[in-house]
Length: 466
Image 1 (cartoon, rainbow, N blue to C red):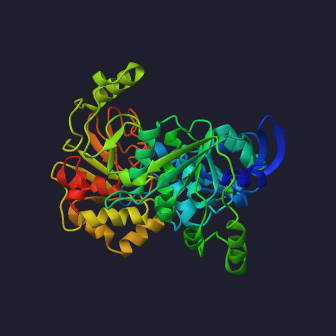
Image 2 (image 1 turned 30 degrees about the vertical axis):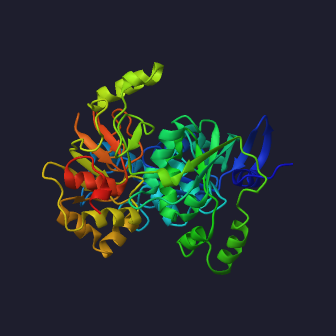
Image 3 (image 1 turned 135 degrees about the horizontal axis):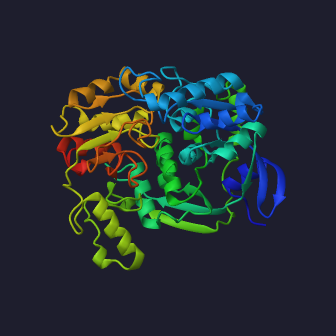
């Protein structure tokens, strides 16, 4: 028999009951809730008179619908205040640990989970958010779920799931200076396509992945869902163990040492067989930016915008529609495109290393006069650490607005939107039609590339500023 993949090892260790035809009932080790979906699940539990099965395994934080305005509280964004209140009340009712606004540990759910040690190698975890796949960077089986699945897991600490096919994306080579995990992720998506991972669980492997620090791995896994896959995972290694050690909810002392011994077994066997294998040459990856309305519509900064007249069939139609929405000219260079807004934040790129990289470019420079530029830390811990290093002073001196932790302008669920037809370079994960506000035009890029756009007032190659 062939060996087991990392995904299989985690899956098999959590099967409560084999339901046949590839379906199984799995134990869920961690359940994360946020205000946008978690409040609804807790309200459903209350209405049905259900009890939370294991409240000590559930953690909640408000992030999507709360304002990031400096000095905010839960009532600042009135439309979202009901969700904030509902999450607080639900957490109190069911005895769930809540990380509220301003508290240590509060933040975007996929940022605070890893940094608090809630997410650990080998665990199964779920959240009512498609970017839960972020947490696979620590070697966890992390899945985004719907509201009914969330309610089922709250009541039973289990979930009925169908085992997916397996895909391995092997990345080899070194990322060049100025090229980041965000560029690698966008490169993978535009190379393989936004539907490449449908029906698969993805494992990232290779020398490029081994060289990434944990926060870069979190960025890469965050964009797994933009490949169409529900989960992405990276085998834990010494970088992972060093990251986890000493964190608030991680094992401590001899328990941690024992855990590491077990975690070292969490790797794909040499003779394991994947349903699909893909290879990415990391040496060829350049700073990358999206031009259209899907993450797969991306190009290197020195390339030209695609021309639908040179494409065929549905692809030509998709290109034409995207160009019309984005207000771009086919065949024109993407570099030099004027921008109005810059957003640095989201569960993709709002961690301390992201802010350090952005500050390195911003230091001693000024944002272009017509550009509105925001920096939104991913968590209270990130914010405090950045301020301790003086990064907020670097940003404010350069003309950026330093905000409070939250999802911010990524999904515009908190009233913070890019104005209609304004162009925004964003470090977030989706550039869908209307994602950052009605008729907003979004270009996805790395934090360094976003700063370059803010400083020059146009989409620019950050390598020209280093």
